[in-house]
Length: 288
Image (cartoon, rainbow, N blue to C red; front, side, top):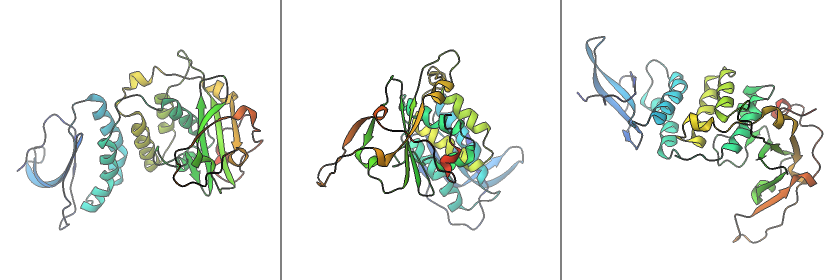
């Protein structure tokens, strides 16, 4: 009988019997083992379990593990198959493979969470939010896309990838959000994250929120993230939407040239007067 790793958080699954056993996994932060014989003291009996373990002693890594497992594990039944366990834990394993240690993209994340938290329908906004930070669109649903650009400067000069401006979508928008620091009364990405989580009743969407959030902030302690607070009302008053088709771009006919970037001053472009009426952008905050 193999011993459970002492002093580390574990999740035990009573796996469906007569199921094919998947290969175990051991990474820097996560360990997954199938068909391990364990003795449960409360029941005074031995039984085989699948064990998901966090093998990091770092408090923030443990917190992330427990926070994500809270919703992802709840999606499994009482006796899941090995395939169901593997599919459910693969995303968690991928997340923990390369958790960043440094603060990154906090302002961009704040802008995206701000849009979700201030929308009229958090569920619809979360459904449209990207699954991965590197996805082409920040928000996409039903053939409609939205790019989020944030700035703490007093202008609306934003950087774009060339590919972001090459679009065949009729409804493809850019939102320019001006952000102002407010250490006293402002909201941090943690504040927005907790607010969205509290107001979303879907376990699937809460799980999505957690995975994207921690993929971006990594192991940066909440205490450090809470040092960066921004004025919600200021951003609501200084938010404008633009059509991607109204933004100029160069024509690149040379396939050997890639990674083209532009800096565009959106203050010199015409913003839109309204968004779609029947798609996810209809729920987003729009200044009067």
